[in-house]
Structures are given as structure tokens and as C-alpha cells.
Amino acid sequence: MSKFMVVAGGTGGHLFPAQALANELQKRGHTVHLVTDNRANNFAADFPAEKTHIVPSATPNLRNPLQTAEASLTILQGIAKSYKLMKKEEPDAVIGFGGYPTFPPLIAASLRGIPTVLHEQNAVMGRANRATARFADKIALSFPTTKYADKYEAKCVLTGNPLRDIVLQVANKPYPAIDDDGPINVLVTGGSQGAQVFSDMLPGAMLNIPDELRNRIRLVQQCREDDLKRATSVYADSRLNVELAPFFKDLPRRIANSHLIICRAGASTIAEIAAIGRPAVYVPLPGSLDQDQLHNAKNIVDVEGGWILEQGTLSPHSLATELTKILVDTDRLRVMAGNAKKAGRPDAVVNLANIAEQSAQEE
Image 1 (spheres, helix red, strand yellow):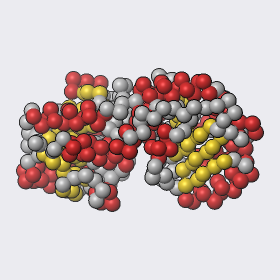
Image 2 (image 1 turned 180 degrees about the vertical axis):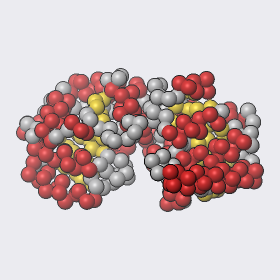
Image 3 (image 1 turned 135 degrees about the vertical axis):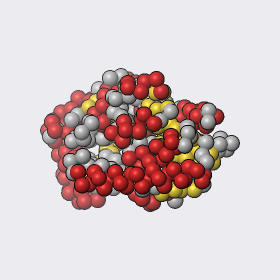
């Protein structure tokens, strides 16, 4: 059996697929170590790894020369520590999940001749991954169309984004039936911290949806703690059947029970919704330099598995108009659920684990 080092930073977007891969590799009898930065200390205890190694890392700020110099020094320290770590642990392959915490271990592994695989979650290759890609032996992609990946086409392979077991457990649940006058289940989620825009827009939007349709809606909304009181007050005036909470531990099950999702367009969010097969209204996070969430969502919209509404154009009234058009056409919802399902890649973790094993054997 082989020893793998899985490298991931301290955000859910990197840790969730890394955790899924680690679980799959352990099921196959392999040994897994986690290499991460200090941000992941809170998550490391739950990560399925025999050992956890903390390596210095930092994100350069190109607008601030002093901060960039400090970050570069930290990264060099991380490479030096990773180089020693690779010599001590002798992994058969190193699998990185993006972000600057991946940079030092992958560079060190490359210098030592250890096979490396870089996984890109988004439809736009991140800046850290673009810097690391030249050192990777293989690059695993989550989307068929990934901006900036064409430069490395020869070593790219489409795997999908590895999914947690709790997602795969509900991935085969059929799309819920919708009776002519029956309830319509709508789920609103905005990531681990919620999304303020949904708390700002959704309550007012629901007030502007026609009574006959609004009375059928069963709304479950993730709402930031700071927004709960305000949103609850507005929803009370709408007489809507609503459940609000800052976090849902059983989010995949709630996705499976939904007829429509309203959400951001992070890579893990899209991968989970598509694997389960549910239509979604995607509101990409605005302001990022690479617009990765917008490109993520376009991959689903292009196969008619969802809609994109850009945050800058939204108001409670316009959102109500769009939701009314979507929710009254239940036949269309069913079709788009099927389209989303076809775009899903529930076998992503198996695909990536196969590549990891192949890489280890090529050492």
C-alpha cells in the first residue's frame, strides 16, 4: 500500500474535497497524512489522516510590496520545512487542493522527485494553482471548461470535485413530486457563514410573490446570526412557512428534499447540487478578480440545469419576478433537475483516487 500526503488550506472549498479523497484512499488501505497551514487547526482533528503536518504559508498581496515580500519569505520557509518533511516521511505521492498552502509542499515534492497531482475545484484556475501548475505532474479538473488550464492541457484530466459521503448517500434520491396545488420546497444557502444578500433580498421578495404561489412555498433559509431577527420580522408579515437557521448540519438531505435551491456558486456547492440533481438559482459572489463563481455557474447554466442572477442587478421586486416565473413552471423545474443531474460527477472521488494511485505507482 502507498503513503499519500494530501495538502489543503483552511477553507471548506479546499478541505471538503481533500477530506473526501482521504476517506477514499483509506478505504483502499493506503496511509494518508494531511499537510496544511495554521488556519486548518480547527478542522484537523476531524480530518481522516494518520498525521497532520503544519507548514508555513501566506498569500501575497501584489498591491502591497512589503506584504508581498513578507509572504514570499514565509513561503520560502514553508518550502524548506516541506523539503525536510518529504525526506522524513517519504510519501509515494502528494495531492494538492489549491490555494497558497499547497504551494510549498508541492514545490518541495517536485524538487525531491515525488509524483504530484494538483486538483482545481473551480472553473477558473486560481492564481496559486497557476503558479503551482508547472510543478505538478498531473492536474485534475472539476469542470469540462476551466479558464487558464489550456496551457497545461497535456497533463490535465477531468475528474470532477470529490464529494463527501453525506452527499453521496442522498445523490440517488429522486426529484420530489410536485402536485398541482402541493407544496414547493425552496432552500436558500449561502455558504458556511450564510450570505447577507439573501437575508436582504428574500424576505422582501416573498412579499411580492402572488399569494396563491407564496402559500405553497416551504422555505428553508440559512441566515447569518446577525440577520436572523431582521429576517424573521419581515417573514412574519408574509405569513410564509419558513425555517431559518445559521447552519444546517444535514444540508445535503435538505438539498435532496428541495424543488429549487437559491445559493452562491462555489465549486463545492455546485458539485453537491449537481450530483444530487436539483435546479438552482445561482447568485455568484461579486467582486472577485477572476469571477470564478460566475464561471462555475455558467457550466451548469449552459446545460440548462440552473439560472444565474447577478447580485448587482437584484432587488426584492426583480427577484420576486424571477422566482415567480421559475416556480410556476413545475414541468420546467423537473427537466432542469434532470439536466443538473447529468452534469453531476458523483464518481469524482473515485476518479481522483485512481489518479493518485497511478501517480504513486509511477514513482
